[in-house]
Length: 119
Image (cartoon, rainbow, N blue to C red; front, side, top):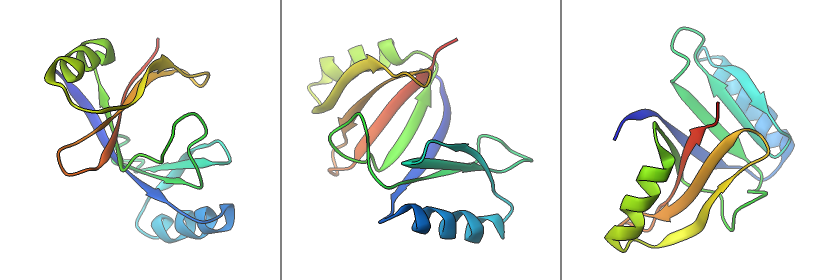
């Protein structure tokens, strides 16, 4: 299994809080690379896989995940998770913004968004 990146997800109270967070992390060299209104992702221009996301809500899942893990083959990861008996919080599906993903709860109770970008 190849992991491409890991992104911490931080839930915030409002779009204003997302803007404030964007401005703060901009002081550390991050730039906005995605903004869908309810989720904003910042990345390092020098290392684009160094990212952080801020969510006001999760529009297609039951909870805001604690972190996102991009893998090479999300279908394979899903099959392994299901076979392990881990709790699937949200079933595998394609999203309109070009990712295929599912949510799983880790042994510590954290919700992980596991995804692959579709070509």
